[in-house]
Image (cartoon, rainbow, N blue to C red; front, side, top):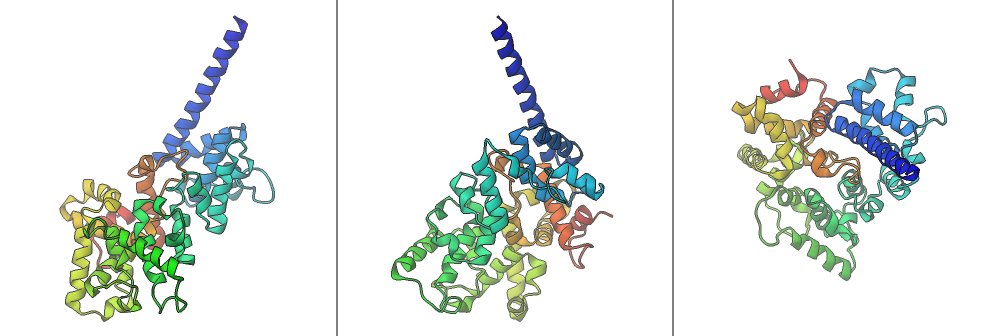
Length: 350
């Protein structure tokens, strides 16, 4: 009887702990740092391994949030960091039960290496590191054995990297025959089963038409792809875009705007615009996509760790929307001229 009572109490204690951790994560997804971060910090300090993991992966995003910015330096460190050294250390250092996950996160964060996370099934959490790996070596994603596991929302990076590796301008040293066959097979994925004009397909065509990437790159597709990849505000300052004729630029902007009204990758942008800016919805979506930095920046909006917060819980959550608004505010302190007024109000207030 006594043993049964002990077991019941243990189960109840675990359930209470799990509920507390779940509540903290739910508060984080609700974009409520004032509730989420102290709860996670208390759990981590009490030795909760999953809370250590959660706070460790969330920490880099927390420093620039309004709640944390309202604290002094000592309070911020006490809230977000594990005791140790002058500024504390990441709670990931204390994780034991899920050590491989913690180490994979550190590899991605410190070295831009996405593949340990990919190997552990954390493909969505690896998105930022995958984008970093592309920036360091564009063909690295296409040449990796795990490239088929890369999230659909990043397929454009894989295809573009394969195309760039075939360019004698970008890479004077050609790949080996085996690697070339493999890269051409990766590019073929972009047209399978057929050309549909998807956002990821358009991102493939954002490469320079004169690079000789092994596929024809029409100017119209290249200009529209560039607008989608960088956002209109950045693309309009691009030399190649400015050198195109005015009708060509107008067509590219119109094509990009139309695609953003249906593309799955822009669904959350549409959700942000729909309640308040329905009268100028298309313009609002294009503006917010541009303010955040286009598809290149959207790659960095993802769950901190699939094992704790599946991507489909993060996408569309108040946290996702808040992250997007904060990303835009970080790039632009005030509203740039010529943007949709309703979108500007959503991002900058007033």
